[in-house]
Length: 295
Image (cartoon, rainbow, N blue to C red; front, side):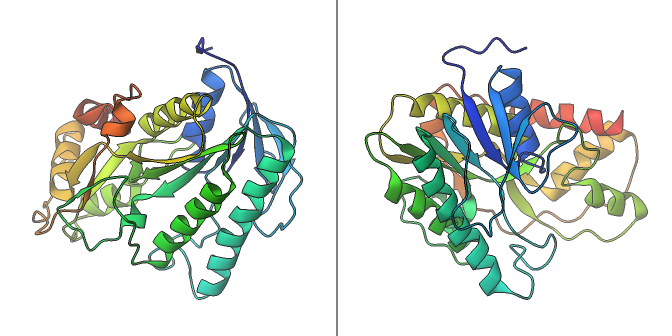
């Protein structure tokens, strides 16, 4: 096991079996914390407890625990920008009202802290090429971003001397989730190898393991903190042309690279998180991931 420093916790995690949730769950288990998955069914391949939960619940009954990590999201993968599909009202209702009910239940059941997996989307896309700070006024311009900001506000409103909270404003998350074979670029790499035309794009990224490390630091920080805080979580600014060139180098294949993107994304400043000791893997981590993909 990981030989965790500090107090061992019982942590409730929503979305523990999902693409991002698996990174978080594995890290909590590695550091010897007890994990209970909150969801519709048990996770068969992870050594975690289980308690039923759904975002449709308005009075969820949660087991007693020290902390909650909320990374579940009702969505339809690939259906429009945030997964809202053809029913944006349901997307809002389940994710906003369901999240509010979950945070209230966590506080009621005795959790001392809660961490919400929020998103870079709370800043909006209008600030391309700018540096984004946690102190900047959020200005989401997508339904997904508005949903994430609403979740942050619900958590902030519950925080007091006995219940602290944090929003992890994460960028795009790459890496092969534990127990899964696919990753966010599986289809991109396949399309590239098939000779399909690839659209230019530049985005910010963080490895799932680095996101998990950041979350653990924030949980430890919340043991002594009071109130609510937001933390930016991002590591690389990565152009798709650069990514595919690295993939070519790692795999020994060849293909037609897209043009570099004409615009840069807004880049989140992560000094606040780094002051807690966070040290993401940067390009070395990306290259290691690509080597694993091509092994």
